[in-house]
Image (cartoon, rainbow, N blue to C red; front, side, top):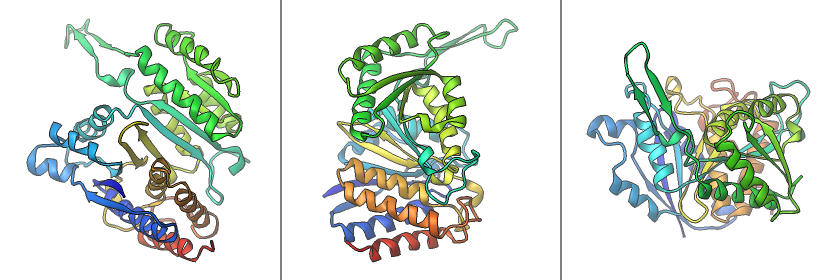
Length: 354
């Protein structure tokens, strides 16, 4: 019995999570597995009522789940950063979800902004370190508010944190078993402390994985090649900030935020999966938002739980919708409502022959 915590969250989050859970129910009936859902009301509404985002006790309580499905966070009534830091970052750090996993895959039928690029050209994964770097919030001000003010932001990288991320990336590249090419994305020519550490550990680990081809690219070059030659990449591994930046670029080249999903992974603990696009408050309640990213996140969750056949069927259903049904991935332009897209996926799954 898989115990799954569900955080619908803010804005359109509840709408896309509803469709993801509808698809999960259908696939669990087609390829039987058992699961138990627990609804978690963490988000803007509760914060506005109670002033609490996520208490330490509630964070500890999340450890009882096998995985978590998150809808979205962010509400215009709440100052930016409060929910994001108090829920997203607190969960990622508190549950030691030290890997952010982002597949960048162009599905058939999805419009790509890159000229002449096809699904076979855009199919790679970004492994982003998720617990260290600039996002630890470490730093200081000197002479704050004065003309000669100095702001210091620290990128803290530990050997243990770097090594566990890189080892995960090597193992993932081997398991993915495609080109078996792992590209370290950094900035070794300028950021000579942090990236000296990353590069040294990368080269040391590469010796343990002779079947994986090690590669390196500066982050600016990585961005250029993602646009010009995305087919060059198999798996990219990078730090927290660079990963945050290049995965949004990845979302665009795979067709937009409506199709992009990701996972915050603790390989030995509780992982959390989410659509990348955010809460999109202007579309709340209109039944026009694209639920496919949430459905893909749910598919990633199933794969992490070992339900690989079910996850594969979910992806097949998504590819059916993108290639044969939907006019666009943009909200309000899909040719179907949010609910109808979910219905399309359910129908495909139920009619799929074994």
